[in-house]
Length: 276
Image (cartoon, rainbow, N blue to C red):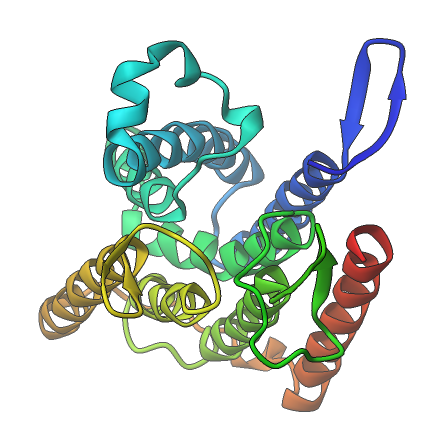
């Protein structure tokens, strides 16, 4: 990981800074959106804490199980060394959903209502977090000006591809929040769309393959897409829960596009300044 500076034995890494910024920005956005539908700040903060913790644990477990099980069985002491990398976003999503559902059930809160709020903030947070990631993509066959020179090779900046797509999804969900058809729709759109994003970006990354250009990550993404589509159909057909819509506060599309451009420009500049 890219070290920004150190204070004695304390090392400050770029990835850690961006993860912290991502959590803060995502939480602030979720709190603001939650206020519109009567979800308190405390509920959002509690959920963020358990989602972050469970997400990291789930991401690590999925990586161990699906990407490098033999290595970790032979080297169990390496399991806790998450600072050296090795997290699966699919595992993070799965565990966060599971723990979030349990939290909502115990707290007597509508899971789908709360999931819609968190789903809007997630791609924003994930995009910001990706800015600090230094797991680059495959070597470029045809070198482009946006490639990253790393250890003598020009690589695809897969992080850039992903945070651009994440921000686009963030804007789409924000816009859709004013026209959603049922509680949970934003959450399911996120689940399907983000899985597609990961599938696209995966073509530019190096991960254990399952045949041809496809990797384990493609298989996991496909599984989430299928689950999302089935859940969308079932919940839409059975949904009777009232949908809270606040059209009077609807943000103009031109403003959303402006926010998108600003997010992409700032993130790209920061990425290339630090990683380039």
